[in-house]
Length: 544
Ligand code: HEM
Image 1 (cartoon, helix red, strand yellow):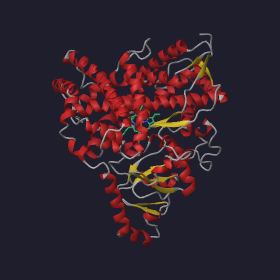
Image 2 (cartoon, helix red, strand yellow):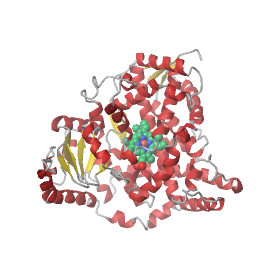
Image 3 (spheres, helix red, strand yellow):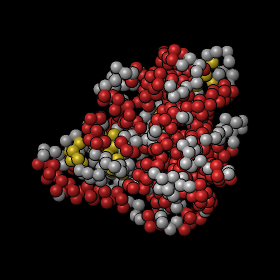
Image 4 (cartoon, protein in one colour):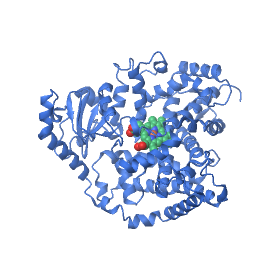
């Protein structure tokens, strides 16, 4: 892909500034997006279902029966009511809960088997709990895999005239953004280059942890602290400079971003499953979500704009767009295939996607380690033997198989993204049923990960499962699924694994973790999070 000249970059910066400051005005006019908002909110779903019904009533079921493949109509599942489907099952006293959808999927799979279908209000889904059968979906996803939109997020962006961003864009638009972004984010060398900044952030975080422990060596409000680490870490990648989240007090903008982003993900969860009335009139929940979203976008843009301004005011003759080592943002802006608005949306998307995910993954891992002291000791001994007190770098990071196994095992027990999502783009057979084009299909990750047949003693934390020699190909494929699959797999995976490995190594080197309270259960704030505050004791290993 050709890079732009310095003049073109300067023009891109200028456009970017104009765009970001006029974003709200664009919302008001919202020329390109108004028709989308004006669409019937249920149209997409009705179309998909009609398509499915037409196909099953006509050619497809005949073909299916010819090949001994049962028609889509026969896929088992809860019946539900006309229009609302099984929605009311989620409001019954002691019934299923939107905040525990992973458990609902698991229970349904136990009741209906490796494939079932369910319609919850406007969402129709086919859930697959057999990893081999799900491979058929993976193999058929094509060049432009379609993941179901995160509807509240996409609706907010359309309504306000923002680009959909990498997470929600589809087809050619998605492909362009993905191609540009993956060159920096999925290339091992590019990510390994960030070992040093990640070490620096993790070292500072160790000092921060020491300073915020109370007299009992416990840290309360650990969630917010870990979130700061995640934000600081992605900040170094996007902007190649420190945001300063560990300062006392935390910079107001960073603190507001953290608080609002958490609220944003929390409110998105119930909006995703309920009837999307918010598309017609703003419900209380929608307004709360919108408020959080406004602040998150505003602050996300502030960080991006700040960097853009700095780059612009630097001597343009020294702009290093042609060089290999430029900030991620400079790189994005230098790409001809991205509009400045797309570059900006992508950067904000990454800032958002990186924080909630890695912070929750780390929280779960620390919880598992604190509850399993023998695992903690094995991990500590590995770090002593393999890297001692060296900084983690491109060479020695591969010498830490146990830390990787610990992370995999935590994500197995607490898969923060607990199900995958694809819309099929061709008819296919799965578990002996015909699945027509346009069907929303999901892998029941939480159900698979807690299945004793796939993972003996599945509720037990055993990182050894993931060590070379103990792992067969099926297990390996399964561990990867927590990052999604194929061309649309998590773009931040390499970045996330590296920063989490570095942080975990440093934490076990410095502290023994203890947990002395009731067990914590998972709940969904869009990603799987602890349902109550996690209070851990950080006991120093040395006298430092
Ligand atoms: C524990 C950490 C994380 C987990 C478990 C995780 C998991 C996932 C999953 C399952 C998907 C959907 C993939 C698919 O549909 O096949 C995804 C997509 C995505 N993730 Fe992550 N993620 C994590 C961290 C991150 C980080 C650190 C970033 C950014 C630096 C990030 C950025 C994204 C983006 C932009 C997408 C959309 C990609 C696309 O549609 O092309 N994620 N992630």
